[in-house]
Image (tube, rainbow, N blue to C red):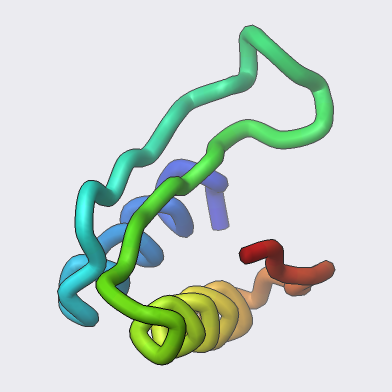
Length: 71
Protein backbone atom coordinates (compact mmCIF):
# COMPACT_ATOMS: atom_id res chain seq x y z
CA UNK A 1 0.00 0.00 0.00
CA UNK A 2 1.34 3.46 -0.84
CA UNK A 3 2.49 5.75 1.95
CA UNK A 4 0.02 8.47 1.00
CA UNK A 5 -2.89 6.01 1.15
CA UNK A 6 -1.83 4.77 4.58
CA UNK A 7 -1.35 8.38 5.75
CA UNK A 8 -4.88 9.26 4.65
CA UNK A 9 -6.30 6.26 6.52
CA UNK A 10 -4.38 7.18 9.66
CA UNK A 11 -5.46 10.83 9.40
CA UNK A 12 -9.08 9.70 9.08
CA UNK A 13 -8.71 7.45 12.13
CA UNK A 14 -7.20 10.34 14.11
CA UNK A 15 -10.04 12.61 13.03
CA UNK A 16 -12.57 9.97 14.12
CA UNK A 17 -10.84 9.90 17.54
CA UNK A 18 -11.27 13.70 17.80
CA UNK A 19 -7.56 14.55 17.39
CA UNK A 20 -6.83 18.26 17.15
CA UNK A 21 -4.91 19.97 14.32
CA UNK A 22 -4.22 16.83 12.25
CA UNK A 23 -1.60 17.57 9.58
CA UNK A 24 -0.23 15.23 6.91
CA UNK A 25 3.11 16.47 5.58
CA UNK A 26 4.74 15.21 2.40
CA UNK A 27 8.48 15.23 3.27
CA UNK A 28 9.87 13.22 0.34
CA UNK A 29 11.86 16.23 -0.89
CA UNK A 30 13.28 16.93 2.59
CA UNK A 31 14.45 13.52 3.79
CA UNK A 32 15.18 10.01 2.60
CA UNK A 33 14.02 8.46 5.88
CA UNK A 34 10.27 8.76 5.29
CA UNK A 35 7.73 9.94 2.74
CA UNK A 36 5.00 11.28 5.02
CA UNK A 37 4.78 12.68 8.54
CA UNK A 38 1.52 12.92 10.46
CA UNK A 39 1.23 15.42 13.30
CA UNK A 40 -1.75 15.70 15.64
CA UNK A 41 -2.58 17.11 19.06
CA UNK A 42 -4.79 15.84 21.84
CA UNK A 43 -6.54 17.23 24.91
CA UNK A 44 -4.94 15.12 27.66
CA UNK A 45 -2.39 12.38 28.32
CA UNK A 46 -5.12 9.75 28.15
CA UNK A 47 -6.40 11.15 24.85
CA UNK A 48 -2.88 11.19 23.39
CA UNK A 49 -2.30 7.55 24.39
CA UNK A 50 -5.59 6.57 22.73
CA UNK A 51 -4.56 8.46 19.57
CA UNK A 52 -1.16 6.71 19.51
CA UNK A 53 -2.78 3.30 19.98
CA UNK A 54 -5.31 4.02 17.22
CA UNK A 55 -2.53 5.15 14.88
CA UNK A 56 -0.48 2.00 15.50
CA UNK A 57 -3.53 -0.23 15.05
CA UNK A 58 -4.50 1.47 11.78
CA UNK A 59 -0.94 1.14 10.47
CA UNK A 60 -0.87 -2.58 11.36
CA UNK A 61 -4.23 -3.06 9.61
CA UNK A 62 -2.60 -1.55 6.50
CA UNK A 63 0.19 -4.17 6.73
CA UNK A 64 2.75 -1.60 7.91
CA UNK A 65 5.31 -2.46 10.58
CA UNK A 66 5.21 -0.08 13.54
CA UNK A 67 8.75 0.63 14.71
CA UNK A 68 7.85 2.82 17.69
CA UNK A 69 5.94 5.84 18.90
CA UNK A 70 7.04 9.16 20.37
CA UNK A 71 5.15 11.45 22.69
